[in-house]
Amino acid sequence: MTIQVGRQRISEGKLDQFVEEWTTSVVPLREAFGFTFPGAWSLPDSGEFVFVVSHEGDFDEANRAYFESEARKQLTPNPTVHIEDASVSVANVVL
Image: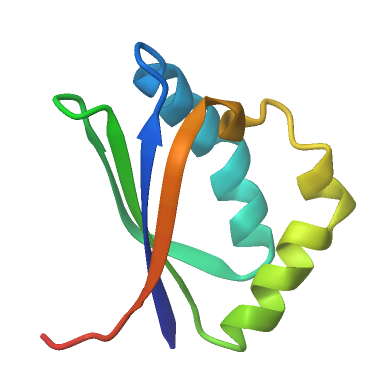
């Protein structure tokens, strides 16, 4: 299983809107591509959003299929408009 940890800095004043749009549009679509979300957190003090996403199969292939899909290209609402900066890292489970 591959696990990715993402950290995104959200535009000032848009964190709540981002979380709402992310949970109603991104999560169901990612789940349709076989991804699961062990957790996600909003950090109001810093205006950041952190999530953990995993996939049992070929993460890279599933990720590519997700991002290249017409459903992803037409995602509405599209919360990515609120992201100012983002990073993702592969995580190894140690506990």
